Image (cartoon, rainbow, N blue to C red):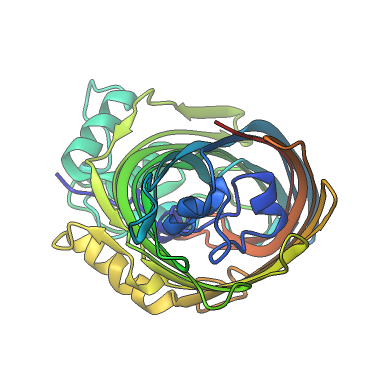
Length: 490
């Protein structure tokens, strides 16, 4: 069976990006915790962090997410917002000390943590006037395909034909089928072996609208082992289980009054539902260069995902000439064969200066080479092409995070800044990310309550479709969060 092309490079990048999630204190310092440790969400960054705790500890965090998108599509402009409230972090670390005090191995820690590593909640709407029609999408798929491999057999319903063509020939032929049976495409000759097509939509201008609704998230469960050796060295290991839950709905509408156009209105809807699970590991160290200055290093392995995609489609075309319409609603779920995705590994170097009990300053630098991502099996011809393309259009990206904390009696004041380079060579397509954060914390002794506000922005030029109608809608994405965390000794 063909693996087809439900899998796109933008999907691979989506599942590979790191987001600042976690506890309020972690987010308040923009995630710059690689050399600090002693914070539950810092374990997800550097596994040596749990050994910095002086006593067993647990925490959980709730977050209110708000996304705002300003969209430009040709002359059209629009704005959309989306809000959600959820649990984005929970965990516990258990500390075991050397009871006799005569071993160089001072502490041993075990921790189990959950962190949301990616949030997919998004919703944006684009509208404008274009000179490129949706017919180019179907024409690109159809040219070169036999007519009898993209059309229904006698006595076969359109739903049955859509499913049979998908099973026999794959996704490409299904798209051509939708174009032909909705009368967008016209064969050059009405014969089974015809492979050339033209459009029943005349050239001119087209009023188009496009809405994308996305839901879901990436999550990570970590089993952590860490230890303190002597007075200065902390070492740790994370074994991580990952999961993906993603759904995307796109709704496209196009109308025209072009002379000679048989088809005047097109509605084309698509859904994608993706689930997956994966594994990765992390090795980390924190070393006290002096009593105040700490250095950290983390190696994060690639994540090896196994992923399943399911899609559904719907199309309707209207004919102003005779007032008729054709609707193709196959009620057929395309379930694609499982495939594998290897995301890039990452290295992180960190420095932190601790001012006794007064506060700290911290800086993290990370590097991840997105061009090394791979769809597998690499022997599949489509995956081979995708992997080669990723090597050309993606690059190694650097991330810089800085944070600080100042303590006054039981109060803590925090702030942070981060800058993440685009994983794409073309930054106009997918821009760099900039973000900042501020937060407060109050220490009750055995319990600490923290609250944080953080915000980031990035400009993305989203292609409507990967072939044919590849015009882009420019989305200026703004993401803001309020996070509340409760941490307590066990």
